[in-house]
View 1: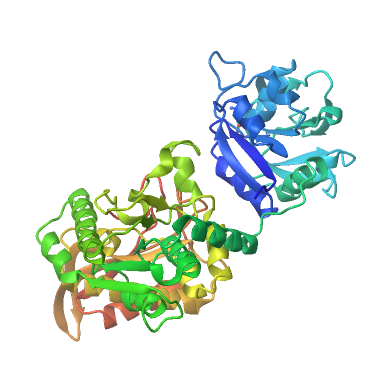
View 2 (view 1 turned 60 degrees about the horizontal axis):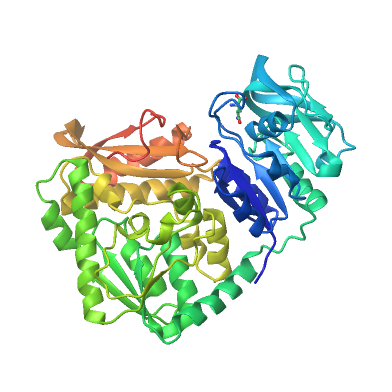
Length: 514
Ligand code: GLN
């Protein structure tokens, strides 16, 4: 099936994935490729338009990422963003140099509304800028269509050739009308009709999976996380009882999580699939006994997971296909949509080796962003609670318990975390933190309870706001909410007598504790 496509060419900008996401939000399919990609390959994809991203370099530097001017002669509209805009100008004969005034942050831009790019955009509009260089003189043929107080060429166009250069970042949400501009580019300039929709995605994938699988047996390692759950349901719709899902409960899940996963995917759930829950809690606790070092804990958990999975797979017998919940950011991060991501198992299931006798890996979600995976999940009728689940690390609570992991400590952190989640949900916050959880520190301290001395553990609460999980800042949870959570935890969770709130940002901290 041919669908229209926009190609994003990546010059190393920090917002490269955002560009693609915003375009897809316009219902236009979009893929990211490295600037090193062969022009021939790009031409063969027959893109409706090309977008050049930002990047950390300066176009006039020796060895800076570049492109030939043939890229601008394909007869396909090209939109350059920041570095991409500078590059377009540089390659086509304009002049780019260090700006006398660098701009960073929200800046008011005055746009020429007669340009198609700025149709329905306010004449004065707030945009996100992040540059040291600027286009001092646009390339011949270009007309300036936006400026700021310090930047004479905030945007330029060469309508006849379909070339557009923008100094700011429309993909960043701080650019208030950025989505509108990208929408204008893909619809008004590239002539897209918008054929990328999640309902058609589901239909098309189901057909493709059936064709590929035939009558073969399919195995899916289910973690209960969003990606593997959506992959499992999609597969189950496609191949029904040829699918077996193996869910390993390693005893490091959040409170009741194992049962919740079983409710959805088990025999009483709405899906017709073979579901195997392996209760391997004891086994994991035994392996983890006495181990304090975080990296060793991670390794042990990952390896044990594989062993359990391996044993189950052997029991099932000859399996032709293995399903993985790889999603597009995994593919991009593993080398820009290149050839590399054929087997990228560690993200989802802790590095499955090829011990299972399978012919092929199926990654039905490998073209999708997280928010699209969620849309597919809803489309498939998966409960919202599961679809909007917070990210949860593979090693689970194993890395939210500082130091040695024991069954008792798992209980403590599960109960504290459940209280925290309950109270956050009840608080009706105007801005929900993007991720929040309780962890168990390895610290014991003295307290007093019922006139008696206690010597117990401290729970740490974490809540962060982040867009991409690469950087994060601590959320400002209202004091009353923190107080309520604290008082409930020390009262209801045995052996916890102190609660701390972590306000460290990332960097220098990480979101998780270990
Ligand atoms: N490095 C270029 C500059 O400083 C481009 C920056 C960017 O793409 N965000 O102007």
